[in-house]
Image (cartoon, rainbow, N blue to C red; front, side):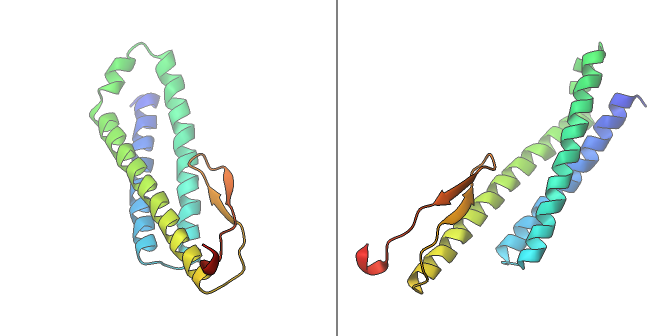
Length: 141
């Protein structure tokens, strides 16, 4: 087995693990599981994504050094890996949407209960921190 084939196998393995982890995250979010469980999954997810990024970089280097890159692009394992990673992206986007909805529900509940208005830190798709502005009280809306 060539080094490129080995790297592709590792990417496939990590992609399968990431998909499983994203399914677990979705389940945790739907059950409104404990924050600790959700945070643990998020940390594992970040570690897997970082490993996948490093493997993808190594794959790109090996393909650039190879004369048969088209052959590896048509490899069934690679094609399956691309399909898995596509599902991972959809699962991750759905998890982000679920978190946003839950955050809005919680914020609205706090507003109804009359808690002081505080700026809520949110994150954009790129991971940049954003702050939601203060809300008006119900009687002033």
